[in-house]
Amino acid sequence: MAYFRVERTTPLGPAEAWGRLTDWERHGQVVPLTRVTVSGGLPRGTGTVFTARSGVGPLAFDDPMEVTVWQPPSATEGGLCRLVKRGAVVRGWAEIEVRAAGQGARVVWREELRVRLVPRVLDPVVARVAARVFGRAAGALLASP
Image 1 (cartoon, rainbow, N blue to C red):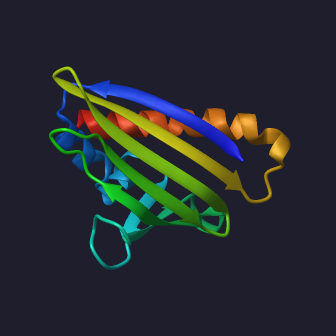
Image 2 (tube, rainbow, N blue to C red):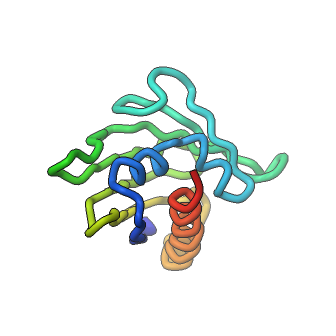
């Protein structure tokens, strides 16, 4: 599996950073060629299921995910959200961690993914590309309300 880790700091407080990073539908606004829909239940929290549809026309695929851990940041503790990817094309997990850092917050996005039909020998390439895409997405989500 391809593993990557992205870290960002922001002047936003932990609660605001958490809110922006876990607004799943907004991810579709910052990830190229992707639309995100929440398919039912709570829009945020353990058990939330959402799907990122990425690509164009017949080259598009669904990446369904479920929130399995939901611990928003508090005044004394950092927050952690864990997603499990259960798609036919992309499988694995992602974690978004948000902690206070000075007057703002530190975000760590970790992800391990497996892309169907992509040979494992290309995992380092997949990890680099994914880190770039998700690093930019995290930066954009944190930058704009």
